[in-house]
Image (cartoon, rainbow, N blue to C red; front, side, top):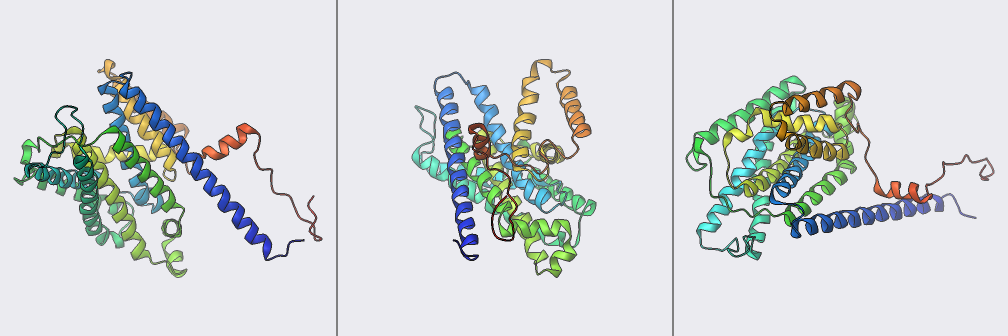
Length: 361
């Protein structure tokens, strides 16, 4: 007969085992999806146009899940996410252009794919783009401590426009003509695994004690402060992390498009990112992934109906917001391991009540 102290330990061990099994199932599924898509690309079934759309989908997924930290977890409306993206994009682009100017071969001329050195500098450029963007996120996060709601939205909107104007009026970014001849170091293989890593990190962060502290601030900042949560620390952390991953998305975008223009990162780009998060559900990483996929593919699928595609796009958003105002997923997160258990008939039964003598009924 198990003692009272042994039962919690047994439950913790069982939960830990289930968590590891869930991680293993997700890793296998991600690897299988990678093998399928890469095989379709290598065989030519997926052409360059579709693979380019897939790259844009992954970039938008990173942007959406990064905005979840500030908007979904912290509950603050941020309208300057494109500004962080632009900082990361230009920082990474200037870095790889400098490396290329030193004579280091980043792209194989025969295969037109990144070399081993190119892959290494690509990952380094992502880190640089994320770090520079996080510095700007820290700059925005500190004055935003005393603000919330519409006032914070105005500050972040102003920040995004300030960054865009500065980029257009300095020479080393190419000015209004834009930055050109950026090495195309972003490949499907590297971007896929970077996207998977970003999703895993943000998903784990949202369920960590830091993520729960940020959620507590969202629900009631006065009560969270009274319970010992440092509101200042966690607000700055949320903005800094959100900016860091937005900078990574910008760095990938720069090395995918090979051309940058400040007008790409205007106010409408920030709205597009916010729409993805709201449509998917402010508290759902899964919802942001699905919404990023849908809102990236839908305009491209309707490109043949050029006169009506934006009309259909807008109507789809309106219909979803009317009938599902909390977003497609709300706060729900899809679990592949739970789905497999249900399909195999091994779903856990509901908890049974215990009698005073310990017998289950």
